[in-house]
Length: 266
Image (cartoon, rainbow, N blue to C red; front, side, top):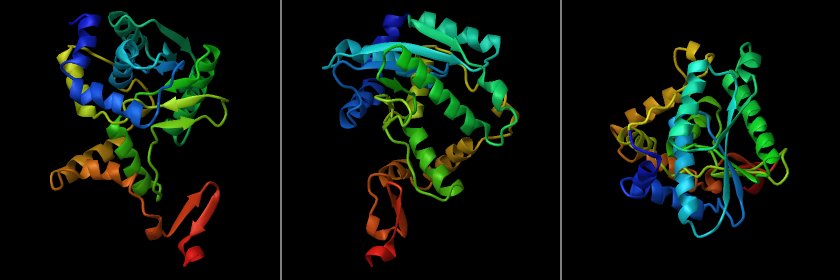
């Protein structure tokens, strides 16, 4: 297993094109980081959030603007072995990780939609912790595949068109912004980085979703892979659809809270 410095170098050299440059592109194109930002990197224990921590630390060392980082991990009720693995990886990667306990798993077992409730509660808790640390932003490890799966989920299961934005202002925490620096990075390249560096991270450590046969997001992954067998660039086109919306072809859409029908301008 490689040491922390070696792992950092692989991001700049071996995975320069697929991870490093794409993260920089997202940061620049979507204006995710500004001079003096204090960013809380939210680590769940999986490959995505740990990669995010590693790549932002390297960017911090080389980027054109100066910003500071804090590394936080909320323990919503992980089993001992999962929590221990998170601690071991943080130590291996020399990340000064701050772990704090919030027993969310216990409170959502009877919920009809536990993933949604859990995500909402976790987000609020992370905002609060970041604010206490003096941060003005939180960074999550969502990547390109998460974005296109969200678009598909919204269309097929919610009957609406909606994407996952690269940054969001918090509605409840003043002056706090959520950013997604891995927005353009593909999951397959994250997996390659993990294997190349002989790393091992926890997958889904939630005892509730583990009870389910499958998840809707897994269905979307499989559907997109199936579509790619026929249309190689289907994932690129799903992503591009969120920046090529023609309102003149839409039956109805929202402008803030106002619902606009095509007949209104007919």
